[in-house]
Image (cartoon, rainbow, N blue to C red; front, side):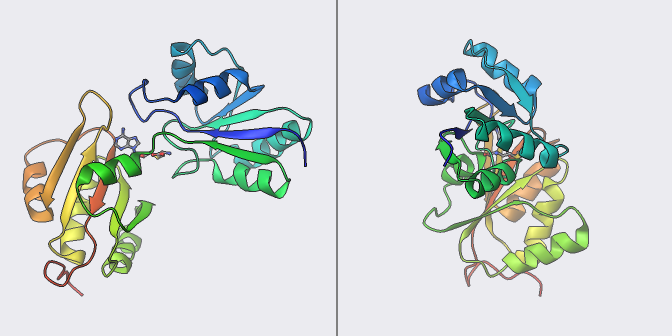
Length: 233
Ligand code: SAM
């Protein structure tokens, strides 16, 4: 095993204060930071006076950059992986290099911190004992419908990442396919305009109809229960 480590570092999902002492230290000490968007990460690094060099690592250069970063690790360099927000590997680039590092016997050290899915789940007030994170639903209507149908009898609380442009339509689809669920639309978590709209899906649809919804969104949906879930088959 090489002596080097790839640190998978969680970074804020909005509020720059949401970073651990350990994350700041690791980002300061590694040889190189692989960042999804170096301009975005620069804002964080400037805030904490971190001068470590960066290289980009995003969905368009994953293939070539994974090999390059693994070669650096093999040479004994320590790297940190960060994405635009939250925990790398959760609906963003990260998994590929983590997998390759493990296959190459390189130590993977996860520095825990913010994750929009977990903050939204906890803030939703819906059951947390069992939950299912599905990330982004397919964009194509047919595939999206199938995905929601597959979730209809899921007992666990469901966590979905959604765009502000599609959230209203997604709620309508949820009501049609899954029935009158309890939902929470968690918007701009940790930021100035943070808001959580909770209620039955029909009520939330009515509320959102009257306004334009902006920003980053996590949708939390209650699991299947005999009383409330009578969506169309
Ligand atoms: N890795 C990230 C994490 O750990 O949460 C998620 C990255 S994914 C590309 C970005 C999506 O996460 C956004 O489209 C939104 O659904 C959700 N998200 C990220 N930050 C958020 C925030 N502050 N408030 C609400 N949702 C957020």
